[in-house]
Image 1 (cartoon, one colour):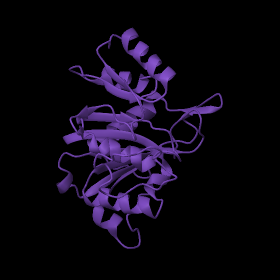
Image 2: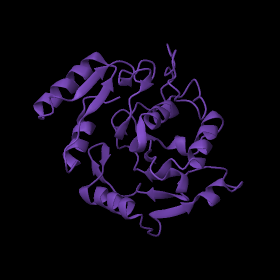
Image 3: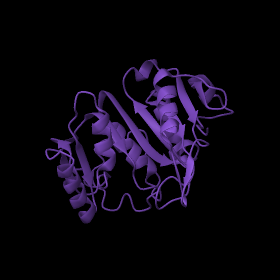
Length: 242
């Protein structure tokens, strides 16, 4: 769901030793825009495929999904038709099948399956993925038990075009997942500036999030390393609501 490719280009700019870009986008016009964007920004060798990431993934290694060191995604929120035409799940739903009327976990599980054994990812999703029940709760419980979720970052509302609902970043990390004994939860929902009708993260807000996450710092009313045992306690029942 790489859209016009701006998120991929931002990541490439941050990579200290260079990075190869791969992406997929199902909308034809947006895919063309992404290809053009790559050329304009000196990334003409970027491999941007066309097609629906969930029902027809194009980045494959034989019959399997191709795997990567890093993945970033800002997929469409709560897509109702995510499974239309889905024939091969490529082993993505081993932890449970996302509900038919909500594709949020389909994108998260696709991203997880697309990571190498030490791979890391950041996925922007609606806050509901942290606490919704039923099928999503089953998947979330498995992800927590396997140690794949390194952190959650709650963002301010009204940041993204097309939706005013608050979103979060779920950070996945397969490296040392089995040894993970907690999840760093960051509440960054109050650090922003008004920009017309939208809210925007200032550079100091972004630096604070990155600094706290990288150093795994605990700040009162902002961040806390929550032990997995507390998350799994029956009174919390694997709810990650910040």
